[in-house]
Each structure stands twice: as structure tokens, then as C-alpha cells.
Length: 162
Image 1 (cartoon, helix red, strand yellow):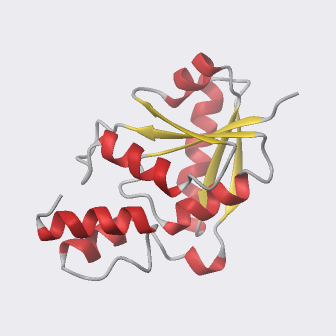
Image 2 (tube, rainbow, N blue to C red; image 1 turned 90 degrees about the vertical axis):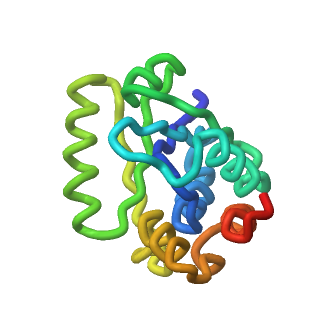
């Protein structure tokens, strides 16, 4: 049986922590789909098509990864694809509390769904897209925190050259 999983998120922007989770997930699953959400509750820094393209470039070295956009409920997206497994990364206890509640709610909405938690690698335990956006907005160097494609795109925005 082909083991497929979805790694959902807004990925605004995609960080080295996200990439680490994907690189580890492909060792567990035959096929990993990165599902880029178009959130209704917050205004993203980057449009969804830009986020999707930057992720595609960032994971191009991985053979069994694809990137898709979705809107609405994650469980509806999973049902449409016939996938029952979701991957979520955990950095700290605060992540666990939030992710556990989300997993329980999703399980109520889609009983066949299972959530697999991958602990963040220690070197990325502090890293979040929110921190990257803050550093970027204040003119700081984001290169240590994001894949090359993301850093280059954001730097081009800063310089007005994109």
C-alpha cells in the first residue's frame, strides 16, 4: 500500500524548519504533499502562488514531494485526495497544546484521519515564519533561517528588484 501524507500550512514564508520536517517525512512516507493554505483569518506576507513556487524550488531535490494549494477545511482536502495522514511539526510544548486540539477537531470531522507529529530538529526548535517576517520587516538578515530561493525572493522584494 502506498503511504501518502499531507504536510499542511501557510508557509509564509517557508523556513528551514519546514524543510527539515519535509526531508524527514519523505523517509517515512512514499509520497508527501505539501499543502499550502490560503488563510482567511490572517493576511499573508506572500501571495499563495509565490509561496507555492518558492516551496517547489526549495524541495526540488526531493523526488517524492509535490506541492498543492488548498482553501477551506483540511479534512475536505484530504478526503478529495483520498489521504488519511497529516504531518505536523512540533517545536515546543506550546505547539503541542495547539496541534493536539487541532488533531482532535480534525479527527471529529474525519474519523479516518491520523495526525503524525514530528519533533523539530533541535537546531530549528526556535524558528517560526513569524520570527522570519519580523526580522525581514526590520531589515535583518533572514538567510540563516530560510531556503536560498526564499531568501533571494524576499531580498529582491526589499530591494524592489523583483
